[in-house]
Amino acid sequence: MRQDSRFSRVLHALLHLENMEGPVTSDDIAHRLGTNPAVVRRTLAGLRDAGILISVKGHGGGWSLAKSLADTTFYDVYDALGSPPLFAIGNDENDPSCNFEGVANAAVTEVLALAHAEFIRALHARTVASLVHDRHAIDDTHRDTADNLIKLNSGS
Image (cartoon, rainbow, N blue to C red; front, side, top):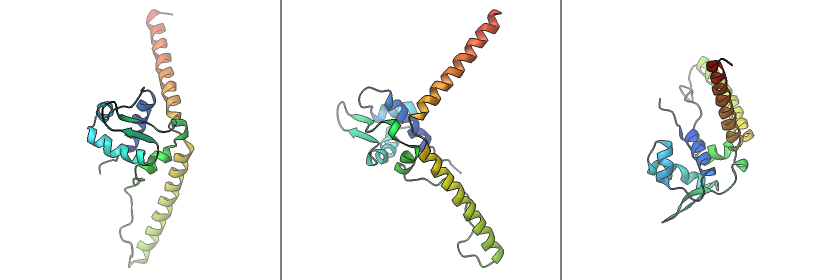
């Protein structure tokens, strides 16, 4: 089954938009994401409608942030994308004639509801701006690793 990568791609795009001066074209975003501009426009339209982004048509136009990434939760982005299904798991029939199937379906439904509720809670708890901190932590780790390799190679 094909995965829906829009969520991570949009987070990626938002981080680029945060670091750009002025509006960014769909072509530029598409180049950074390795996709095509039509996909970018279609995907980002939901974020524009949700008030996360603004878009300006014409020369000098493009996409820009409508609000701070510190004020934008993962849930805001997920919701703007239409709340895509989290799981491919589901029940075989909605109205089973076998009692065992009914019990199994009820158990699966309950577990999926709990997992979905936890997923939504986690989305509300994290802002897109937190990814900037994560990036800096990764950069620091890479820098520390590189420094340690240099020390090892120089015999220090």
